[in-house]
Image (cartoon, rainbow, N blue to C red; front, side, top):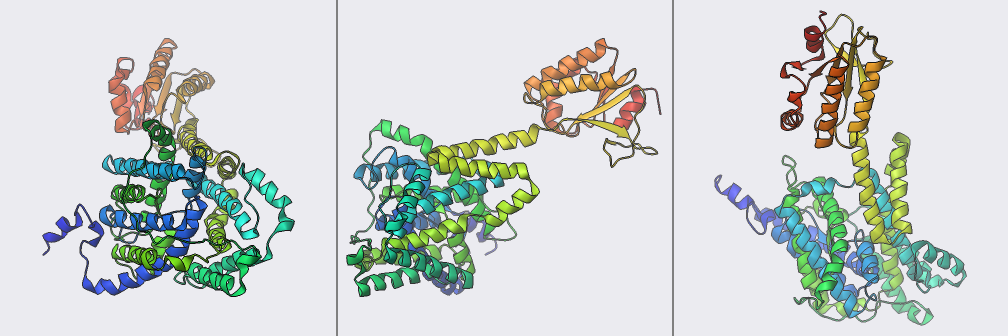
Length: 561
């Protein structure tokens, strides 16, 4: 029995069911029932957010649940239509086709297939590191911007106004100008559902506040004949089941979708990794992010084949499965079966659901994803990174949303490069009575020794800072009285690229011309050591001038003890 477990844990399909026990079945069924109650209104609302009929959201949930259960590793993760990525791809697709048209749906299907293929490739090539492309400030700003898009897109339905076209800020201005024409019934329904969902969430995340709100709102519409008073409803939902098909698109249309697919895939990777790391299948083992990319990718491929759109991991729904006793992906499959049954036998129950109620659900989602506490914490602790939050949110709000997301990713990468390479030259001083040389600061009592300059760079040495490093070292030598020895403390230099190696070549040569002896201490990085060999730095710096410590270099080359 003990020999069988590793094999089962590496099953090619339904890996999360490895080790399943019958005693876990009741917990999975309860978790699945709760998940379905949460997912039904959420998936309908998310589909409407993207410009699709409600049943398309159900198709996406069924596909995401089946795909992830088959190929994912996490036992709790719920995959389906998601309000984080929906505004992004809806904004991109709207530039290519009219929302709700057959062409719009065909492109959404193609986009789902492309996103799924990218995710699967990411899994096969172990690209889990891609999930780290977005820093926390950029992620927080990204969610804040998405939240504003959701709020503005749902306000017309809640207010009972015609949805204006145009950029987000323009829409907001139009809605503000028409505020006097709001329908009090839709406002009451939308805000009532929002209050009910928020209240249920505060009491317990297990309470399906959204479903309760939708049922109450639907009964109110029927009892009060509110459709005749301007309250718009979902209308007839066809009792159709998802059937596999391929989108009929010309090859050049697929190519146009590729850049949008890459953006969506990056966001899905980030959210999938964050979700699977937050809800570990086994607390004693790290998350298998690459395998979960495969599950999410399979979900998107299946969603595209079912006529829907890209899917994503959902942290709130995953939390529900974990908190209500779920032990495997059977919970997600059971929830998918309930949604499938609703499509087959109960679709007529949805025709009187008011649009304002779905808007209320999405208003709650939008308010929940704004991380106000984290924004305030970043503001207090790192003002420059707070500006990164603001810049990312502003880009997503002001620009077309897919361009805003691209700007956010670029800002995150630039921030990473800046923080990695911004280290300036550091001067080291000798701590009296010890063999320690330490970076000079107001907190360190140290001494400088005549004729000796000890400097270091606490960053990788690359084309981004090589020229500055070269110039700063020459200035440090110039400041030292009668410089005879330069020691470069290299513990922080974890990498040296071609440009930096050429700068070191020039530095070593110029020091020799000025009769200054050069030594390198604590070259600890194996990559930096390989660079010294690869770029021929030992041709200009003798190997016996590389030491394990600054003190050793000073004693060996300065003639002092």
